[in-house]
Length: 349
Image 1: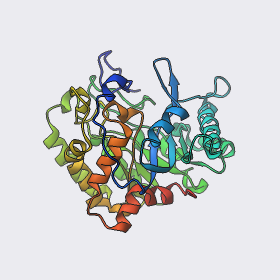
Image 2: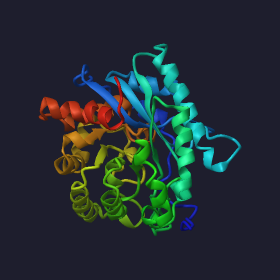
Image 3: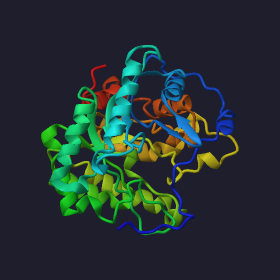
Image 4: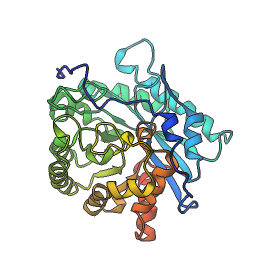
């Protein structure tokens, strides 16, 4: 069972403060012609926060050349009833419908949800294959893999992932029976956990070298609860784990997600939003360490919107990424902004 959390636990998704974002200084778009595939965003319609296709295209259309995106699971539009194991297929049905809307061109040039990553409960063991096949049937041209978030921490001050995983989920025998169903179907796995759990991802990647694993959000460095004020210690531990994980050729990394409430940065607490120069300066050690370990061909910048919208607007965030990639070769730049994502998610754009 997952550890019960205090009502005051931190790290949950917060609604972006629109009035605060309006204070962000307007910036000229850096390298506006550079093609971008945003490999990680969500869509939802919640009581206090709506982020659907119109809101997404308002962001992707804010100046950068975003040619395509990848939708990632967020418990959006699950089926209301029926077999509980199959209810997450509703999210794939929803995202595929959004993708069809975007592909019509009515909403602009961006192919939103060109790739779809949903959820399947791998703890079903081998029986999860039926769920995976249902996802594939719902979006045969776009469904690419699943995420079963495993973020867990012993501290009652840190929220566990939305899947409410138990400790050590990625090492569970039955869960791994479910994981083993991915590669035969040509599906990938999104690993989302916190930085102390990176050894679990290392072990998983070594045990299943034929399965493509995409590490979300730079490996999930924590900066809240017992980790607050210990960023140097966290960085050292995280760096060692990332270097070890990079020896697994089946693993790629999404560069982003550092604007979340659970992370080591507090840009959202500033009186005014950060500039792209400030974001680049603060994130540089984490981003450069990831690229140095994995190489640009196994890294991809991500927005993680609307979650990271808590800390920055879309145009400024991608300007920050372009500052971070300044000086990279043309080949590496192409990989970081679109090439790795196109290859990993098999996108025809």
